[in-house]
Length: 310
Image 1 (tube, helix red, strand yellow):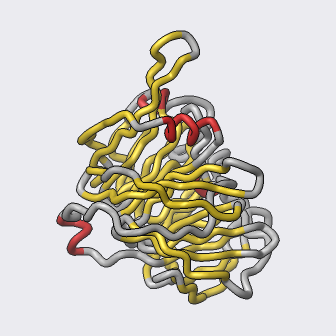
Image 2: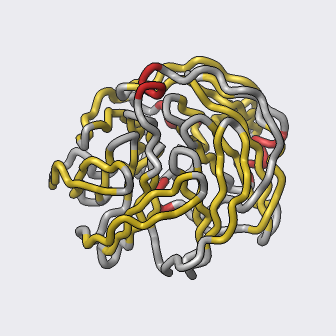
């Protein structure tokens, strides 16, 4: 893959924005329509294994539990009802149910299944993994507290730069090399269900995608929406937002700009922006609309991995 997509370790993206009404979302898939959105979110420290879980719903944080997990986990993925945690360098990990901010371990493992793989993105019932040292991609199901590999896609990730997923729709920024060193970027999207990706469409976007890649930007997706954001300066981010449902992505609209944060994560309808020093802000991202909520008081310092449901 062109850019490291380690979702749990990413140190980027954006800040607090406010946008107007957008293109109405299409209907969600049957699975997403009948299952409850997951507002659960995990904060984890790799060196100590200390963790906190809770819910982030409508931009409001509520802590549910403080946990001591094994240390050393480098990747995490959260679906509608499950959490997968593992060390990408050893393959050691665990999975369990994760709803209403409460995690219950179902399975622990210490084998080669996830050795050398990091988390790319997760949908309502699926997870996408990428090779740490190559372009390989595998996908599997993540439900009822258990991960099960479904398909090996080979080197499909060779031209992927950025990836995100809503409950049922995976969004990819990928490139085509037209001449030596000259790339054309496109937004590709499709369904991600039961561990299988099926492309639905692809379109060229304006220069924004080129800037998104050049500025080391990111994609963040909630249950039905996607946000693409990058830093124009050392202190400010800009973004575009749209809907992402049933394998389709609406036209992306300007989402404004705001102050820069180090780490961003999502839940079903919310986004948290976090700095390692303990500063955090939250916002909602739902129906293709982004709205600031405000600062989050009392957030601890030093969380290296933040992963939320959809």
